[in-house]
Image: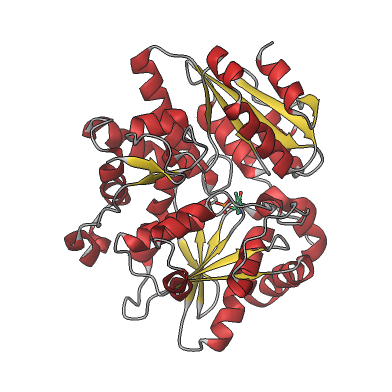
Length: 431
Ligand SMILES: *Cc1c(COP(=O)(O)O)cnc(C)c1O
């Protein structure tokens, strides 16, 4: 499999090179030259296949011959060694719980797969690599955990000071060893800009070997297809396909879902559920793409003002906006609606949503209200306890913290405070 850059000004690369580089030299995102078709024989009998087999079949054509099959099978098995259940919330809505991994967020899946691939590639090349990553919340924890103590890899995480939850901050600042946290006095977009500037700086890139672990990296983006297949495997009424609502920020998750669909996964419709950061809903309504400064919301992992992966979504549909709109809608949900949804679903359905999934629940509910014969899946991207600061006052009850998190919460935060400036980052990297 070859990957081209969405800016079309860089040479094509294979999976190994795309994983190591992260972003293409022309600052485009890597995209597969062809979208493989998932074997129909497996799809038609998907209940009879193990999750490992399904995931292996999904990822195999993308990896090509860059990782031997037996090694890839191990990476896949290690990536998904926790449960991913589809849980009924009510008669029409099911929740795909992606939060049973080590950092209680869906990003564990991409981060665990990527760390294994990257470590495999650099080990064979006897290289040392620095992973530079900007996080609006959950990426940092998942990447820190996925790469913790991996040989030959240093991880530097930039996060916006005061804009991540207590649990999130602990997850990215308490590990130590090869994991370093930079607390930036700015927004997530500022962090992302600093990372982008670093990749564009020739002097820096000559001195240290930099790569990214954001969802722009193909090794993080592509394995996110796995759980859409697992959802379909667990979906009982295959005559009535699900509408899937995905809480979206940088649009990597939903882009993986759309890619899975393009490979043959049966899905009725996708909904990109956004918070007040409504660049894509605005694009759908007005056909104009206007990047904005991110605004802070209670679903902070989605506070993105210029979603990187949207370009890949356009690529899946070859730029055909009308065809795209048949498969995808996008809506914006306010913080007040999000809180009301958490409360109502908790009280009436006895199901606790985190603020991100609450955005997708609200979006799905609105969609089903005008598509009465359809049923849906909301993607639950994080455990509600990660956002207990938001959730507890809304429901008026305590959310209990899983044991392994309790011990992490007592550890001391270790971060380096940094002004919002690329110069400061560069100085730090060349220290
Ligand atoms: C990262 C994240 C999102 C947004 O995912 P994208 O792939 O960036 O659209 C949603 N919910 C949670 C909990 C997240 O951590």
